Amino acid sequence: MQDNEKRLENRLQQFREEFHSRIGKEVRHESTKTVVKALVLLIAAAAVGWWLYLKPYLVQLVGGIPEGGVVAFDSPSGCPAGWVKFEDAASRFIVGVGEGAELKPRTYRERGGEETNLYSLFSLDIHSHSVNPETPSSGICATEDCLLPATGTVKGVEPPNIKRPDSNMPPFLALHFCARR
Image (tube, rainbow, N blue to C red):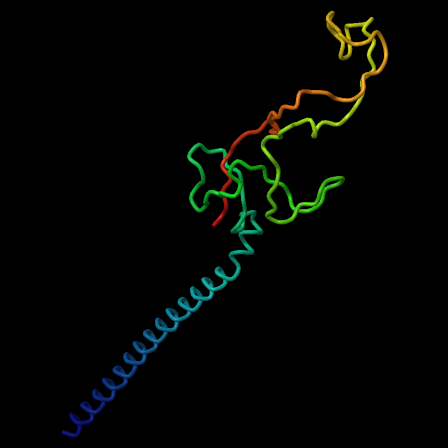
């Protein structure tokens, strides 16, 4: 009987040791999995935070156009995705802010210019022309029906007092101006 009890006690001791070993392994395994999951989540959260913080700098660094940038697009359908029509530039030239050499200074969002000029007697400068009707192939007397004196200087301006619009528009190409939003 003692032999049986001793065997039983040994078996019970082995069972306890094996049970504790298996439980310990399982606890370590689950603990390791939890720690790895927590680290992955922490690294992902840190990466998202850094991306949100660094995104404006990275976009600028790699040549992206920052929000508010205005670009002309050669596309019949208008502005691409992520862009809106820049209405303030419709039918207008864009001029840089500041003062160029021998040019008038321009301030931010200043508007100006006219598509046409209206000329009248008062907008013409008084000036003079030398004439020689004997050489009618040049100058202001280039026709046979010249009614000017034989030689001399014609001074002043006497055009009819009419007003007519005259285009100021240089040659142009219309494109879509779009702003980054």
